[in-house]
Amino acid sequence: MSLQRRLTIFFVAIVIFPLAIVGFVVQRIVAGEIDKRSEMALPAAIGGVVVAFEERWGTVDDRLRATFTDEELSAVAGSVSALDDYLQDELMDEEGLDFVFYVDPSGAIAGSSVDTPDFVPGFKRPSPEEIVEREGAWPGFVSASVPTIGGTLVGGFWL
Image (cartoon, rainbow, N blue to C red; front, side, top):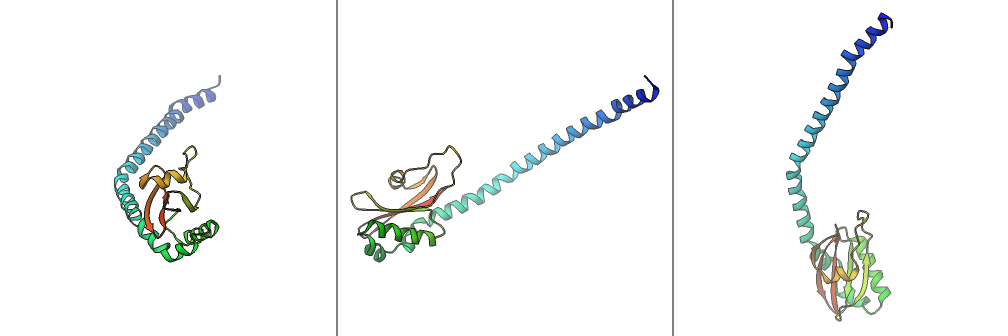
């Protein structure tokens, strides 16, 4: 083996390999530090998310009362298609609601309008019956109910 080849191998062994190892170690240290700083910032962000969630949750029943009036519901309550059209039209105009159900006095769902939720794959979408039966925060949705003339409105948003 020539002297030039030996010197090249020696140079690679004493310079390039150590630099590569140091570069890898420094990269891991920096990545770890970034992870730690991200985790340290989470509590402040979580507080803001909780406040926003509670604010939105607290206004669901007010949004239902303001969006769907007794007079308009009474006018369309006799026809399922007219009721569904009315609920759909009003829901499209309302920013804070993703679904609304009109439940008659017997407890049956007489009309509905539901936006498609954007759940992660594998999460089971709650059925309309599950949403109507449960009020408050549940896996996948938040709902509230408001009594109206001739029935109850159940509305809310997807999580």
